[in-house]
Amino acid sequence: MKRIIAVFGLFALINTIAFAQDAEGCKDHPMFPNRMPNYVISECTNNFNAAEFWISKDATQTVSKEGNSSTLRYDFNAESGQQKPSALQILRNYENAARKIGGVTMYLNADLGAVFKIMKSGKEAAWVKVELIGDGNNESILLTIVELAEMKQEITSDDILNALNNDGRIALYINFETGKSAIKPESQTIIDQIAEMLKANPSLKISIEGHTDNVGTPAANKSLSENRASSVMNALIAKGTDKTRLSSKGFGQDNPVSENNTEEGKAKNRRVEIVKKV
Image 1 (tube, one colour):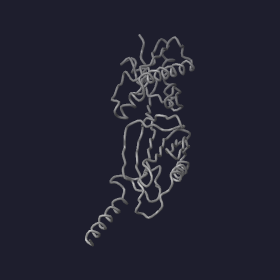
Image 2 (cartoon, rainbow, N blue to C red; image 1 turned 30 degrees about the vertical axis):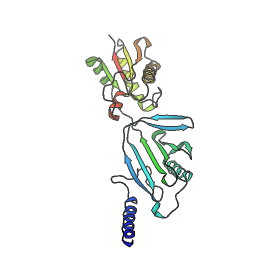
Image 3 (cartoon, rainbow, N blue to C red; image 1 turned 135 degrees about the vertical axis):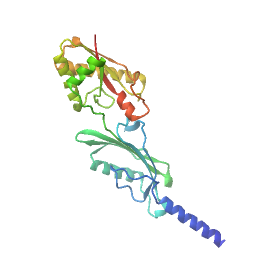
């Protein structure tokens, strides 16, 4: 009997030691380096999927990964001898941590979790979701962070004209508000270069064609691509381009130029093409 107890005691000790350690290769995310006390990372992943974030009790927003995406699962070390924090304590702790790095609370519900949008220099930098999974003593913290890093493109009016003359078209990476057709300020330079090219070549007519990746429904993507192409056209008209020289259309996800199973491929597919009309 004593031997069985001794063996069980050794097994429990090994289990305790193993549980108190983070899973191999896992570490805290730089945005949240100070984890809740007595928690260990049991699992960590990097994925390339879009993530759903609550923005109200009845609504979610899909955020596509354009930069780094991380998911960390934290389990409470019951062998620590400390009392496990309540769900609200956990969520408030993350809320305070998010605020220190420019976070805005989008949603917080003690039964579901919380969502924070991280802002830097007035722009969206990341979306953070804290979920409480399981129940009672087996409840874990699931932390999902999607960092946004939009594709940037340095291009001149001469580059655009040369591409139109040589290839008949050029793909431009114009950044829009997520899920919308509003052109972001940082892409105004590209609009300026298109307008300059058109001004210098008054006989040139172009078609502005919008394309998306495959995140969302085909119908929604087609509508979004049409609206984005129209936004570019209207921006050029506002800069003095004769509207009779312009037309716009949207193809949604129908004409990808790269694979849609990687974020790099999706970023290439989210584009506006300028096509020379003959």
